[in-house]
Amino acid sequence: MPKVFPELKSSPVIKRYEGNPILSMKDIPYEATCIYNAGITKWGGKYVMVFRNDVRTHGYGTMPLSRIDLGLATSDDGIHWTVSDKPFIPQSAIETDEILRIYDPRLTVIDGVLHMCFAVDTKHGVHGGVGIIHDLERLEIMSISAPDNRNMVLFPEKINGLYTRLERPFPVYSRGGVDRFDIWYAQSPDLKFWGNNKLVMGVEHVPYANDKIGPAAPPVKTEKGWLTTFHTVDIDHTRGKNGWEDTWKKRYCAGIMLLDLEDPSKVIGMSKLPLIAPETDYEVDEGLRQNVIFPGGMILEEDGEVKIYYGASDTVECLATANVNDLIALCTEEK
Image (cartoon, rainbow, N blue to C red; front, side):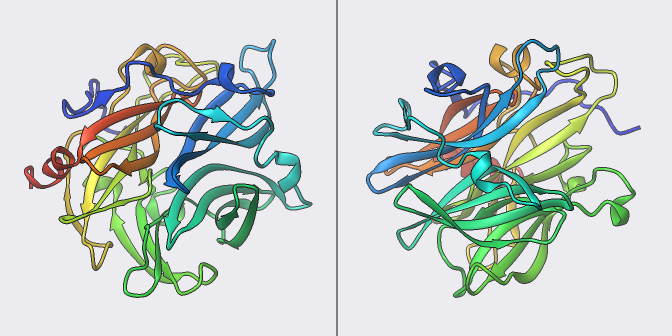
């Protein structure tokens, strides 16, 4: 049986926005049920959000999934959002004989160009994709990985002349035949061909994870290193129902770590405690899968404030803030 972590708390440096959630189904001008795991960045003088919209069938206890669309929203302040009047990428625009859907977008601006990473469900496995968004109207897909891989995030600049990403493969056989998924690193000269793969961090390196870890929001650059969130999962088979499904035994938290500027496969430091753990009613008492925190966007403002955007309970999109120096200290003072 995996080690159980009965109580986890958010770091005191984190402040949740009092108006959370910042986006939910009631804010969407078309059919929507679960709005979460959004990619958010600043581009073209505005905050830009691409969010996941799970459309679920009402009238059933588990609310089964009908489809997953990606929606688009923009903001002047990163708090109040204007949602486009139709889906940015409806599932029907992506479906082929092989591809079923894309979801979990992550946005990164590199050399003024808006890039998006995303997960891809196909009939033969789960993949990670990388693309370029043109004029907030069209996604050009640059590459799709081999299965099984996902949770990809791009660094906001080339490192040693190469595009660089964090990712999470699914090494089931070599990791004991169960969830034991780790964070890896890869590089590319052109966003199409990826290699130079290195392990960044394993599940066993995180004191409050017993199931899997993976990338979360794309990294931001600081003088001390690349500051990046990651997601952690612990499972406790004694947990109850926890959501709309028949049972949900996992808990997702957000962690924070600092990576080397020249070689981001090297971890400079990591907080040994969660950055954000599920605590509020919209994180632990409501929604599709309760006890879930999943950051998808992190923005470093000029005044040192860091905006961290996260999905809660796989149902709503939320915001927390912290000072960049406090986040760096979490990664370095505990070494």
